[in-house]
Image (cartoon, rainbow, N blue to C red; front, side, top):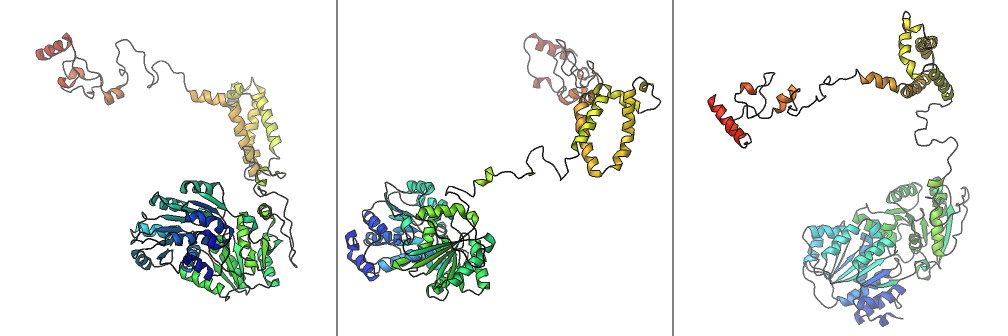
Length: 585
């Protein structure tokens, strides 16, 4: 099948021919017809498979007719990184050169003023990263209600970078009647959930990731200790004829550290990460493409969108966590039938990820041994998880501490515990809880209560001598024994303490808080003057004078001196009798 069989316009076909392409890739062959038909498309393909052209080519033809309004783009393409957004913009420039389309690129590191000027002229295609697009929208510089086509590129990377909340907000600002094209290199349950939320009855197209660059790339692996990874990388770089190479790290922090290490050892290297200013990133990429720099240290996210046809080597300084990323990395070399070489530096802790990668590519990656470095073996394990599985079921070392009440504290030895327990048992037998009061009396030599009981006298003598012997012992042992004795005292002396704390036996009315016996007509506060002073007494209509309303302690209770009309009215003859008695007085 050729591009002319896909239904593209003559202008677009001429631009494709000028670019040197004659046969579409599998993803282009499957996706382009559905995009031209106006269907939503769910595309699963990695970078390097022609995925970008699979939506740029049909979009150029769809947008060829029509005119854009100021600040109201007709189509929107979201990309996770500035490099990928730049690559998409280059595709539109290359394939749309025979069509009159206006394009704008909204990425970080560029001037807001210049970007705003482009938007004011009206754009047919708006290519943006989520962060910069939301900045422009919040400033009131852009309206999204006229977007007819939405493209979400590299959705898996957007999820990894935390852009999904911004993407969801952006999608909520778009008109519901639109065409959505959703592309991702991987398809897990989270990506599937997003696709279901954004797409309507999509046509799914998929390219097998296991076949990318597997035929033309020679793969090798070095297994060393984690402390020897840098030595192994330098050794491999020096023994290979490296024309230009990507060196991949899993984390942005490791990119900077490895860059400094390689620079220190005299290697021609550059770095690429998200914290670099845009002008510096652009200059670094230009130097690498021009051959001024041989080695480029970068992460997976920063490398997205870098399209260089002839790369001789790929070095994986870190084993990728996702097996699909491994295929994506090594796919940057060996393109267009050229030979490529890929080396991976692994450690024994990477066994889980290596197993998943080998399962995906369908073969074992050959191991090599480097001279002067100790080679290691990867432990046997499957791709489901060897590293994390040992944490919960590992054997406990002999003598290892366990969590709980029985563990030793502060490094104290437990060897002296049996003698202490024996001593406590003897003391318990000689001085039971019922005889404890006699032990206290036995401490006085002249007390007559000592004579009837000889055993308690001996126990008391031991208690008198105990402080001297205790002072002679080691402080740590003495503290430990005291703690055990206090624990035993709590066990056998509980009754005594309860008896001591109980106090004298309380009779009726002895406690100020004990309620007295209540008769049928008694006042609830009759024996509590403090409460009378605080709350006052219930009004009695028979009272006719303020002095009579005073309590026994000569305190006028709250409310007793209030006028009669403020009290609740009483019914019947009692109220009238109270009024007549008040007048007579």
